Image (cartoon, rainbow, N blue to C red; front, side, top):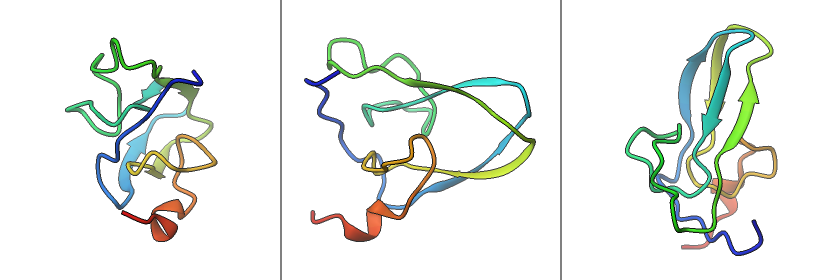
Length: 83
């Protein structure tokens, strides 16, 4: 994944409702039209989605700037982004 160069889908996170025990695929490349989830648009980009299973049901804030150090969750990296 070292050749993955993601593009920011947005400069703020998005609130989503997750279901405990369900597996999700977070878009790492930033090209998905189903942000923040993968739709297969990463093909040929060198990026792969991040698979994760929700630990609990409820609202979660997922990253869309693609700079988080805690993928797929927002860690505030968008506040430090220099565009």
